Image 1 (cartoon, helix red, strand yellow):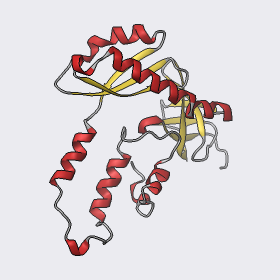
Image 2: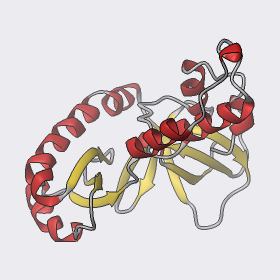
Image 3: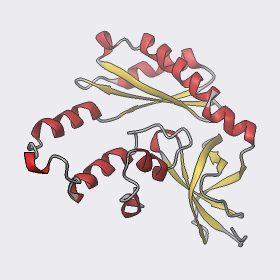
Length: 215
């Protein structure tokens, strides 16, 4: 990609998080980059790059090395799995009504995002001191996300049964649209370096991927 004075780069992080960053260099899609984070550094994958700067945007420091990319895709994910198990012990579901779904470390491991779903309205902020003490010196953020299993179950149980004559027909575009929206909804998948296009392709939806560039 040719070099220009400034670029706006779209970066995708794990679990579908997206960010927009400024850069003096252009990057190809799929490139792993180290970016500015709040008092630290994070890593993500480039999914778009256009000319022109975005005022006030955080910056891309540089392209990640092969070793850094490998660490982000393997060791850091193993550490996140261990962190989730530890968080589940600290926040037992039967006592807190909180079900820890996943943990995500920033690349520099100075911040841990814990995402959960719950029944009722627990005061999750009350559990922060315990979590921060356990994961110190890492700071911890707790975030509630929708009960995705319940959403899928509701859609499944309320959807009308297809006519027998159309059992082998190609699904209508409206059904494809709903599935694409679900797959690409932030938080519904762990990218591990995959782009949205590759995820859609692996689910047999590459023919409609181009219609949903905004997700």
